[in-house]
Amino acid sequence: MAAPERLSPAERDWLARVQTPSDVGSRRAFVLELAEVTPSTRAAMEAYPADTPARIAWERGLVVITHRQFHAELDPLAGRGTFCRTLSSRAALEVALKVALCSTLPLAGGVPLHAAAVVLGPSAAIFFGPSGAGKSTIAALAGGAVLSDELLAVFGDAGGGVRATGFWGTLNREEAPLQRFPIGGLFELKQEPELRLERLGPQALLRRLLGVTIVPPAPPLWSHAVAVLGRLADSVPGYELGWSKDRPPWEAVSRACLSS
Image (cartoon, rainbow, N blue to C red; front, top):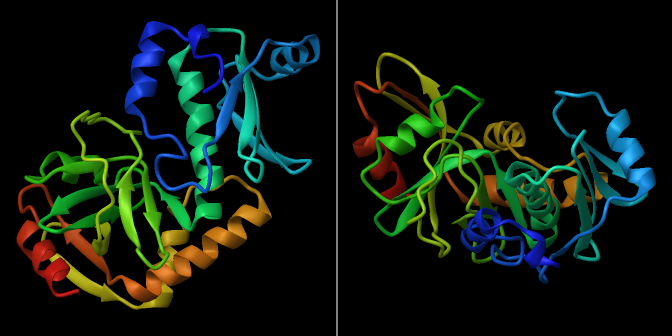
């Protein structure tokens, strides 16, 4: 992060804990420069509708983030970008770094998954599904270490595995281990009254993983991401998991992971 002295103490403390693109396996360190707001950038930010989520677009070979209070232009291929803001906010910095991570991981043989992961013995179980499927809930009920309940770095290369990214939804467990773990299984969560575990074929698993892969709308990045997901779906067992808080699925999940 260029110009770290311009960050607040709280931002510097957070940045020391979060996993940046280079930390989770990018080919090179990604340099995000904290730049001054120019008149043209200020005009673009002021023209953006207030109380509107950031827009992420692919323009001129760059991943461009536009918001009322901040603006970023990221070059995933060059491994660098610029970020400026009119209001000091960790939330704005978090968005920029999260998008940088999601932009560079596919180029390094990985994908960013909107999912939770729990360490079970020597491997980790990944739980995914749409918002409200129970990712944070199942992670909070876990007895083992939790890598994240929000964003994971998952790899489909020869070594494979999953790593924490430092980005969390509601749990924010600072003690999460930072090493890469083998993946014991991928579990799509379905909230149901009875426990159910149903094996998914590679094609079905691939289709469902596409729905929780967070990559900017850039064709070059998605071509890499789809290739990674294909290797992942072919090499790691996937399941549809029906579960409820009243009947935690750890015994069934552990058996599935051990048998993989």
